[in-house]
Image (cartoon, rainbow, N blue to C red; front, side, top):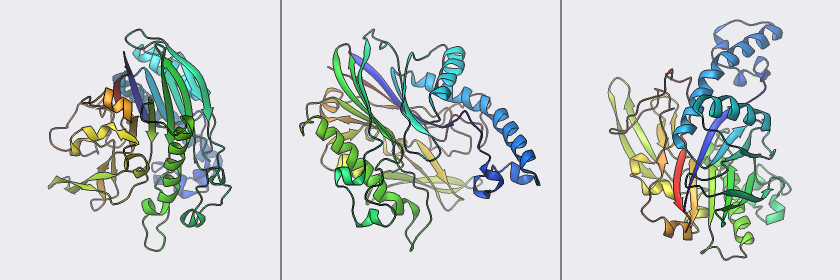
Length: 369
């Protein structure tokens, strides 16, 4: 009996407009910066027109990426609310590609922009096994004090009673054909932030992600009274950190070379250091594990994995040798692919946008027994 599970950051699946760019230049879209807009009313009209004009192409590509993932259970990040999820599922996934999801779950989390994690579930697997939700639980209200995770590094930017998860850890207890499976869906703290005392933003924000990863592990261990080796659980989501990356060296005109490197430290070491869970994407070739292309000029560009499916020890044993898939057809043309990885993009894909997302869906087919 198998289950196909995927995770995908769909990037700002919104039902509302953001007009803060009129007063905050950092929030203003680059195309509007080309024009002199003196009136806030005119700015709002332009922003509405810009968003509406670009959204249909973007969401068609998002839907195509999800259709190619063809998952029984789909974990999403950056969903505005249930209304946005329902409108996208019906108008794009169902009407456009003919594959919808009857079961939809979202709990409002902690993100200041209102972007949440969500889960879409089919009624049955492709093998015809019934998928049942037995219980759903949000951990958004957990604080550092609750789990005794506060430390001196966190104290530089957080307080002891602050919430651990900057979005949520959504826990779902499922049965697939009567077989239990626990699913944990997360979206960890971003790497964005100011460079402080010579420390780059990834390292500066890492203590928050480390606490989030430790909290997820603690939740799972408490769920199973410390006995996790024979349990079926999966941790999915955009974890905004990486244990390795592929440096992209060169320029468009002169060509590129690709160098793999391991990171000395990562928030995700909390999952991997003692074999608590396995990142299935590590089963792929080192140059072929990336889910996002990062670039800030030719001197700072690399490919890395931000999107994860971590599986428990027993699922790793049951699925030894299976490889996950990474759907990259929705990547913009600016993304630099290593040799042999080139793919055909979706229609109307742009150099930078429209695109399905900067992230790629990660998909794993799991045998449960």
